[in-house]
Amino acid sequence: MAHTVRGGVSFKNAAHGLTDNGNTGALALSRDSTYANGGTGFDVDVSGGKAVLTADLSVADARAAALGSATVSSGNSWDLGGTRNASSVLSTDPAPLTGAGAADGSPPPAPSFLVPRNGAGIGAGL
Image (cartoon, rainbow, N blue to C red; front, side):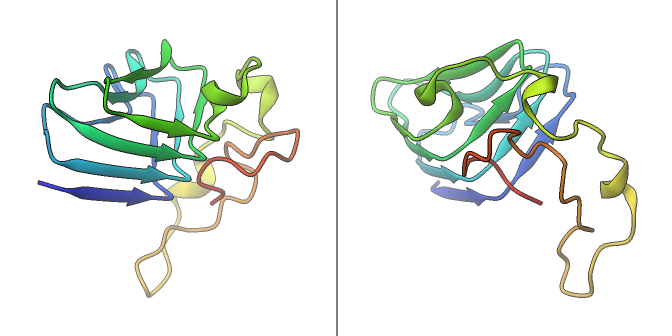
């Protein structure tokens, strides 16, 4: 089954952040952020799966990304090179996300959470 995730955030999970979970359907992940996951930040390597990842950010995950042979990856933190750790973003404090969300269902604003310190246009940008 096909899925699209835009602007998602996944952090401090015991295993993976965002994963295909064995789904061979087409996946489109764009402008998502993962942080401090015990496994892989972006795990899209199922055999026969097809995924497109664009402008995603992995910060301090055990492994940034596991990509399958049919995965298209462009403009993501692992494509751009460099180190992505807590000091490479403005904040790793998720506290602002624990407040009440907006009436339209969007999360509370967290303008510094996982925002690249260098201004790169990648990640969720909450």
